[in-house]
Length: 126
Image (cartoon, rainbow, N blue to C red; front, side, top):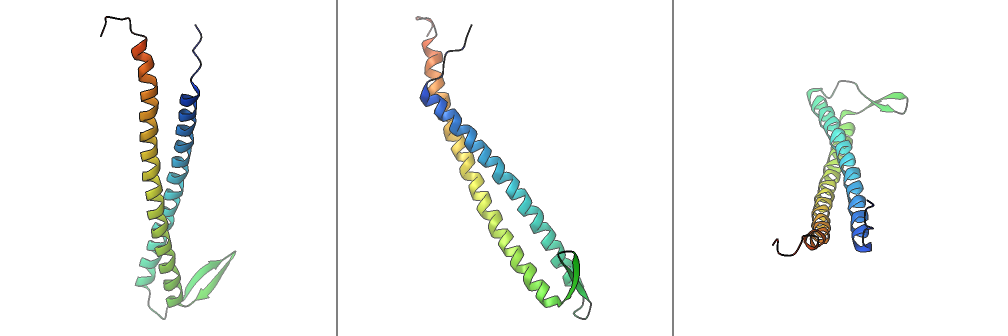
């Protein structure tokens, strides 16, 4: 027995659901990357906090290690931490919006399918 073809409205809702789900997955991956970057930056700042001002500090510049001033690196890492925190917040808000959209689309899909199931019941079984 072949499946009846889905109405255009339902096909559109299912396609939108898939698209939002893919967008949500992309945002989750980005947020995870930002959280890793944030953790690494916080760890670096913590280690720099333990170092004295006279200690030699090096950072990567491509394939090289370059000697830098502690205060410059602390400033750079603090800015990087703030930016990552802001980015994490934006991604969290996008995640919440996508999750809400998925919930709405799931409701629309359920509503579109429910009447079909109710119509297929024999009369008098209600």
